[in-house]
Length: 257
Figure 1 (spheres, helix red, strand yellow):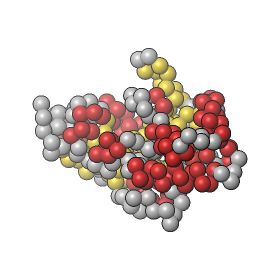
Figure 2 (cartoon, helix red, strand yellow; figure 1 turned 120 degrees about the vertical axis):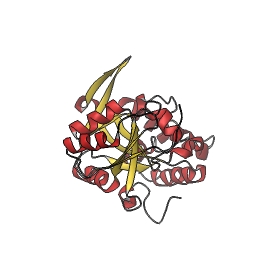
Figure 3 (spheres, rainbow, N blue to C red; figure 1 turned 45 degrees about the vertical axis):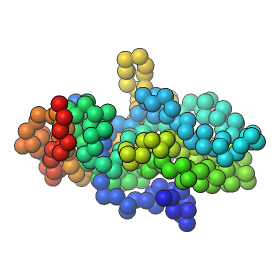
C-alpha cells in the first residue's frame, strides 16, 4: 500500500523498509558482476516483455475516460522523441522462488545475488546528475489508480514538461499487471541520453546500458540455483578472490530436474 502522506515520487523515503534485495542471473553474468565489481542497468524498453512500460499509460487513460487531455498525447510524443533511455536493474524481495530460478537464472543453473538495499541507495545518492532511483513496482490496481490520479491532479496546474514527463520517465516502468505480483519486484532505474550510454550487442539489436560500481559491502549473499553444481566452498573462495570475503553462500531449497 502506498503511503500518500508522503510523496510517491520520492522512493528514497522507502530506504529503511528492506535490508536486502535480490537479483537472479546466470552463472556467467554473476561472474562478471563479481569480477568487475559493477552491476549493469539495461534499457527497459528493450526487455523481453512486449507490454513493458505500457501498463502505466493504460491506467492513466482509464481514469481519464473519453476526455483524454492534450498533455497525455504530448507526453507520449515527447517520450518517443527525447532520445533518452530508461535503464534498469530488476530486483525482488524473494531469494528462493522457483519461477525466478526458471525464468531469470538460466533455468536454475545460475545464482540469486543478495544486494544490500542500503548500498543500492548509496549508489543512487552518489551518482549525481541522472542518478539512479530505486522504485518498488506497483501491482495493486487500486494503488496504481491512486498514483495516476495523483499525477493527473498535479499535472492540471503545470506545463506538460514540468511534471508529467519527469514522473512518467520512471512510473511507466514501475507499474505491472497484477498477474506478476508474485515477483515482488523493485527496480533500480536511471535516465540517460542515448548519446551518453554504453552499448552492448545482442542477437538482433544494440542495447544501451549503464555500469554502476559496487562496494565490497554491496553483495551480502549468494544462493546457488537448484541446478548449479558449484560446491559452496568454491563459491566462497571465488567471492573472496574478487573482494567479497564477507558474503554468505547458500543453496536453493527448491529442487527440480
